[in-house]
Length: 348
Ligand SMILES: Cc1cc2nc3c(=O)[nH]c(=O)nc-3n(C[C@H](O)[C@H](O)[C@H](O)COP(=O)(O)OP(=O)(O)OC[C@H]3O[C@@H](n4cnc5c(N)ncnc54)[C@H](O)[C@@H]3O)c2cc1C
Image 1 (cartoon, rainbow, N blue to C red):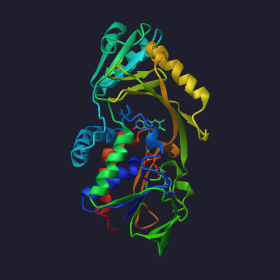
Image 2: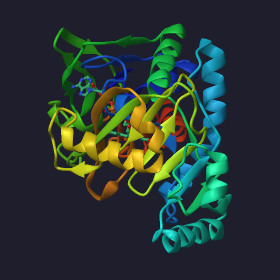
Image 3: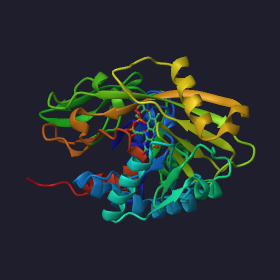
Image 4: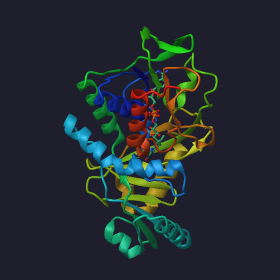
């Protein structure tokens, strides 16, 4: 079994398979978790509109603490999973929108709490006096995606699987409608089953069925500041971004979202906009060191579809695609379901 792509989709699948007795070989064109998974803030907030994907997201959110506890105990690695909830803040003029969002979430069964600016500042003393309203979404959690990807790779290897870096898949090979393996830059790798988890770049791989949807990358820029003393412990959602504190003192400042922008670097205008907005929410951030600016391409598909399961047109090919802006949120449940499908193939 070969999995193409060592992002959160490929690695979570790889661990689920390894735990069930099928340790795979995961290959990546670069390094572990270097794609969108590297850029992500890693917060887990299900959608609000009722849909099968929203149901899957809630199932996944509820499964995540167990998934992470098992991974941490198996590897001895801490992935900084935090469950203090998200504080959605607003300024003068945002009250109606935040109140309506609170009411809609409460009606949908969320644990939410509306508060004024003073109550928000009691939860996060660094927050600006400009903040007039906030809503605490208690169920939102977050994780350090880079640590999570590294721990998953460790767990796969410990269970007898391989995670091979700098091993680009050039082609999925097949004979008589069945997968036979993967051609890589280093030569052919035979396999009777291949899972495609290559993020937004899957369409550069030859030999894939013609009926796959088109890739629709959505670029995001995200920053890291150094926060020597915690200014808040919750995830803060600003009108135009998020502030995501890590336990090691890093503060993630996100995030832009532009479709059709394939610039392969974090641009200065995005950095400025993120910093302006973050400093408005928490003025003390202006003094903190800027540690990093990175970008990534969220792997969307047309119509925001999430696609996982067996390919309809190539036996032995499995798909894990379209994780969009929610790959970490969905990983626990998508990887579990896909691993079950691979281990219990449908006979039609
Ligand atoms: C700025 C930003 C912020 C985000 N914030 C969040 C968040 O807070 N919460 C959340 O849930 N999600 C978030 N996301 C979305 C999340 O990062 C993605 O949904 C998730 O990382 C997708 O995982 P993936 O494994 O499908 O893709 P990727 O992480 O892109 O992994 C694909 C891997 O495949 C490899 N690959 C590609 N082509 C080949 C090839 N030919 N051969 C071998 N390997 C190949 C790549 O090198 C890469 O490592 C964010 C994304 C961005 C960009």
